[in-house]
Length: 415
Ligand code: SF4
Picture (cartoon, rainbow, N blue to C red):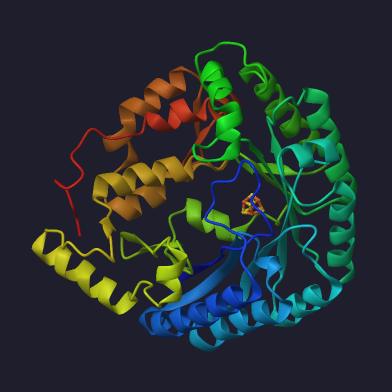
């Protein structure tokens, strides 16, 4: 049976953080209940088309899934179990935020079979938390973490964020030190990205441009400080037994996030819920991002999408349908994604897997690029794998862009 990952999007938050451009919003109880009902409808409608798959991981993300009552999360999981073939050992993760967790909710999660929690902390400094618009304090995080442990969760991720406005290296070191004190199994450490359309873009967009031009920003840390933050993170976490296994992700041995690894290895995944995207049969498609439309039941119909994809594949043309935008990945696009995503992991990509996936040797497509990047000491090869060096990781945007192929997207379509 083929592997499938499920992503379930819960787009609700207590309030919007100032830097956030995720598909999330506040909503009242009635809308949230209506949403869960539609999600259940979508699960029932689309699961039969996945009968040839076994689900290896489920990720309930958002938004803040923990704003829903625990019983609704349990209902969603139960519905997934009833309709999909979920593997016995499946990793089931729920994203949650301090300030929204209770003992009762955690008991529901446990009973539903959720076996991994991902807690959004971002900073251990209350001043910083306030500045980025989070709803919680560091003390509330500690309380939530403790409740989760007491409820029996032994696999917890903590999200933290560096390069915040006015943040200096010592602030970041403080956050990491505090997180390490609670010993989570996994730590995700991302840099702040100032996204257009957010209050942070209004406040710091200019500053970000200044930074990109190599000028000294007024509020954001300089590129050099950000590099030091990354370096410190790697060293401090390695010292405490956390292996960096992806550019921004660290785990104790055996606690890497299987769901994310599947994504980086281009496993098939089905998204359920508002705005969620899917990758099935070498085609990408997404649900509507409009909540009203979703609540009217106008989400992807998998049977129709798979039929449409088949027709497009046979005819080599695209159908214009407003509701289903299918993007077929040509062979060259698949190769690029294989490299972009795979090289994000410190283990890199396996030559053998490239050959199996595309029927050609890695060298015949990327020989020159690999050679050039090796000479620049940004890439290494060992035991059939190709992976980034430490220096390569610190300039990963440049390295990954080297794997873009100069071919038309449609011309070698294998679909
Ligand atoms: S909690 Fe997460 S999803 Fe919600 S607004 Fe903040 S950053 Fe966005």
